[in-house]
Amino acid sequence: MLEVRELQAGYGAATILFDVSFDVGNGEAVALLGRNGAGKSTTLKAIAGWLKPRRGDIRLDGRRIDGAPSYRIARAGLGFVPEGRRIFTGLTVAQNLEVGRREPHAGVPWTPQRLFSLFPALAELRDRRGGQISGGEQQMLAIARTLMGNPTLLLLDEPGEGLAPLVIAQLTEALRALKQAGVAILLAEQSLVLAAAIADRACVLESGQLRYAGPYGEFARDAQARAEWLGLD
Image (cartoon, rainbow, N blue to C red):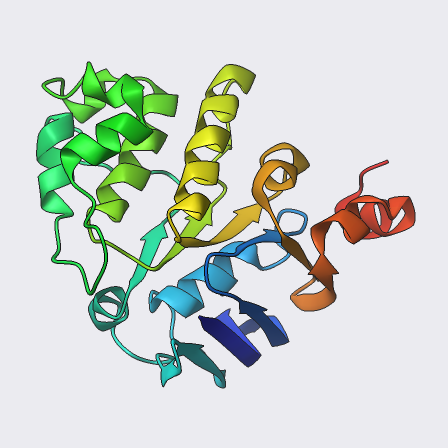
């Protein structure tokens, strides 16, 4: 599905990522973990085409996408939900979904009706403007709008940030359902709550370098690694 090899990226004169390599398999959920500033968002932006890599090889379904424009990467089957949600606050929930509509490559397409089943809270808000719904509902809308593009791989940047535990639980159930539907997920998170609920494997970044890549359960049981790389007991 996704292959990242020796990725280097940065901003201006500053290099943020140093030879980062990892994979995301078909239908798999991978948690990209690390402290603030570790390089998680930079990694996702480089994969999605929002930031041009300085070096490396990124392939989606065997095709190189590194350096390609973001719209071409999206058409190839990648969906990106950036930090901050970035919904259209002046449009209704239903109109936001229509903005994201794109014909599927294959399989059952995502429709508003199917997404309302995935996110029941949005069904009752379909005619309400994006700026008039809660932060948790906006996050659900941001994910739903991206799914309207029918991606095979979904990148999520800190989706649980600032959300109440009840909303995170609802989001967790939706992401589990996405996995069951065959959508691969690369989840950048600082908190382990959401990551632990859906991730098959973990990739841990520290100061722009990959420190661990392997089964999530193995990392979760390593208290020393959690303390050293995430600052958690």
